[in-house]
Amino acid sequence: MGDTAVFGGTIELDPCSNEYSVVKANTEYRLPQHDGLKERWNYPTIYVNPPYGIDKERGTTIKNWLAKCANAHEEFNSEVLALVPIAANTAHWKKYVFTKAKSICFLYDTRLRFLENGQDTGKGAPMACAMIYWGNNQRKFYEVFIEHGAVVDISNLIGEKIGADRKKYELFC
Image 1 (cartoon, rainbow, N blue to C red):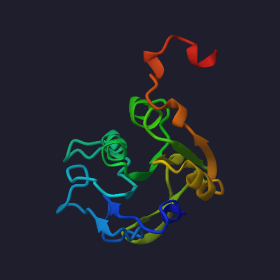
Image 2 (image 1 turned 180 degrees about the horizontal axis):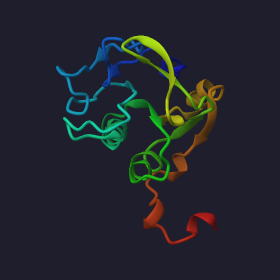
Image 3 (image 1 turned 90 degrees about the horizontal axis):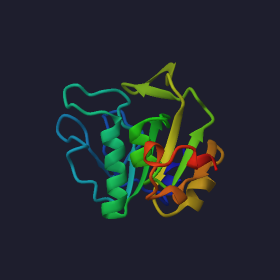
Image 4 (image 1 turned 180 degrees about the vertical axis):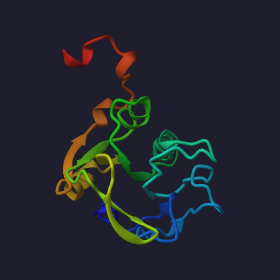
């Protein structure tokens, strides 16, 4: 989809990899040997396609992955791309996407097809998805992803208080 183009050709880390991954990152964390949420993400370029549901065994959800994405950018100045379901009304989007990420591409293809065990089953994602970017090259992100969806620069929201933390209706005035 253009992930490597944003990064200049190389993805250094895929913390959610599996044996059938088409990402081909230089470093791949795969369960059960390497839990991507427990490992350090000190890599310059990171591509994340996290599990969308709840991992009951590990007690994690997508909010843990979004927090790790934001942290990798803040702590290591990593460029991070994450393919996630759109959940703009959730606390984790307000905390880790809208106030930490630089850009979002709301994908035109609302039924992305994912491989299951390396095979295209023909089933699409049950929800609309977005590519989120934590990094410093919003222009490149825009150039690569504009053909895939509506790209929005949200860097002006960094550090802002979103939702209940703001005065009622302030966002609309």
